[in-house]
Picture 1 (spheres, rainbow, N blue to C red):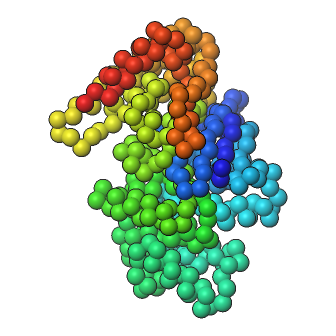
Picture 2: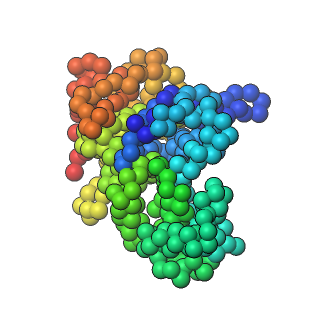
Picture 3: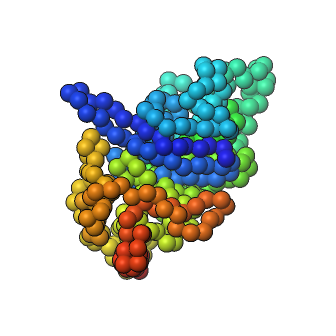
Length: 337
């Protein structure tokens, strides 16, 4: 397994006391050539996980293993090697690209910083190669970011992430800042690059249609914890957690006759400073039982595996016949055409 995240936690201290439990015990794994997507409402901890994977934040607890190495125990040289292998494409290319640098320097900067520049001819060859991979002309090297469209700027950001030939790229909402007509082009580009180079992706996204089309596995987060995870076909085809079912039931569809489900999620998301006891979703779940407020549910296997990935869900509804029947009825309503 290329990347293994085990019981990852990130708690931020608050002035005056208390902790914001932004990420609280999340586990998942990603192998080479796979795409793992993290979905959930804003504030559930998705971007914090991305920052932890990129070592922009130090975890409070848990483990991150990459190619069999414990990332959190690496020395300075080891961290530099890890960062060569794990790159990022951020949400807004207008903010992630330095407006004062030409594309030539934007692409050359990571190569020079890690000592891979080579001689002038080798560097020029590599820069032109990167532009060709992302579908930009050679003349783009002499232009500034503001001289490109939003989709072209994101292509530059992808080229920069590929410069060091990484094994894993973290994509933080890679299409949300783009026009709808351009999003499919960027997704197709990322898919082509993945097939060509065997890259692994960790994708942070709100667009469930994108996740269903683009990912091989998905993790559904709620208030810092994983509610459900597994192969995308299993999670989207037969969601088992009420929160997952509600998300899918309320997602818009390209069908003028489709009416989004209403009333599937009630109330407001809880506070990461004082998360609800037991199941964190129970205050908003219409099927909550007394045990839901008292005991946090364990991640249970739903049966069957796809490419070695188990379908897991953390819900007390899955623990008995009556509860399972209730969950089945919930799924029927949530996926109603």
